[in-house]
Image 1 (cartoon, one colour):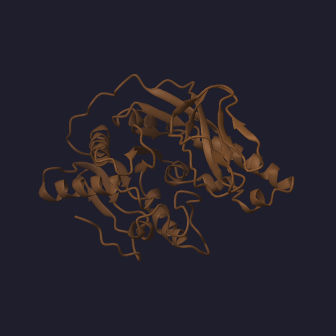
Image 2 (tube, rainbow, N blue to C red; image 1 turned 90 degrees about the vertical axis):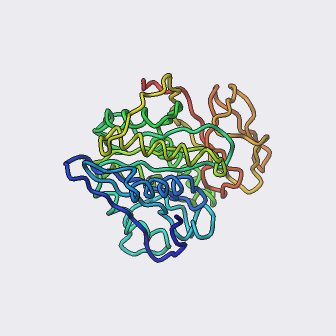
Length: 326
């Protein structure tokens, strides 16, 4: 079962149990070339259609393809990255703005989001979660315990936090470069809201959310990982009568702390980095077009290295051990 590659609407499939319970939404293909979630959702919809799986309480909505244009093209984006600046647009300009005007209200109708993704480089699956409970201005949150229960039951052992604070710090440094006359930095996105994606929007509406990175884009195991995560989520929330597997402890917990921008097209990594590769203090990571070196300020893990990043935009992140216990 494959959703048609039309680009004029979103398909959402909803199931409502006859007993009260939480409202879950499961999303796939926020990036069009990340199809493991789509395949897992299709498999789950088939089980619901056959009666093999039943929703008995609460409700669940499935959106197999969140960005139909990018999905039809088989690429990450349609006109822009849907998972950045995911906010309703009073005057939509790009295709993803029109998607956001449908997707954001749909997210807001639910309590919990499981967002299924994959990544470019080889590596093992991991999950991204939100902040601790807080009343700060950047990402206030009050459902940490529920979110931790979800992230620890998805079947992965690596958990990453700190996205919004790392992104916001990167914006501050980009503004400083722009003030010093860096035209590429000035042209890049300078609004911290550009860091808002599906999970951040969900938290802003009072819900909680986890992004599951199920493996490399073409990894044949990734759809199974996504499918098992859907079942674990249904079991944890008691939406379906399924056995709940225990958390796979111990967890490796990391905090994204530093984002490094690519300044010019000539900036280049010194090797083909893969997410979560370790770097030692002082180790050379990349060279700038002007000959300057980018070195690790202390021992860390490199995360989301993007050799094709546009100048002025995020190039890679550095992550350090988290102080949180999962």
